[in-house]
Image (cartoon, rainbow, N blue to C red; front, side, top):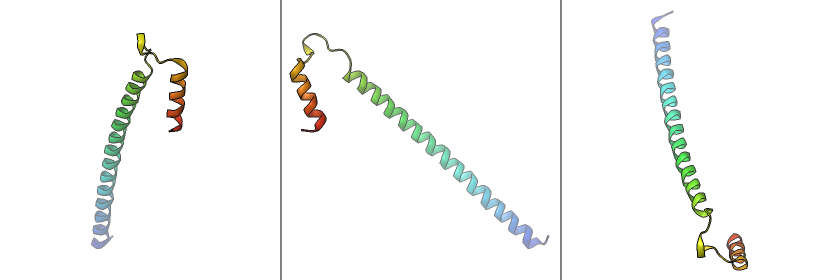
Length: 78
């Protein structure tokens, strides 16, 4: 092989290695960021679920028909 061919191969391998390292780093850090966001959203949804569906105590419990009607209107956006 000539010097020119060897130099071309070294340059190509260097570029390939650099692009591979950058692509891996971007993929790794992006995946970590999305997993963290997903964990935060899941935690917020679980907290909201627990807050909304905990058993009502004492006088805080809404009456039957009025509560059902308000839930129906809320569900349909009226």
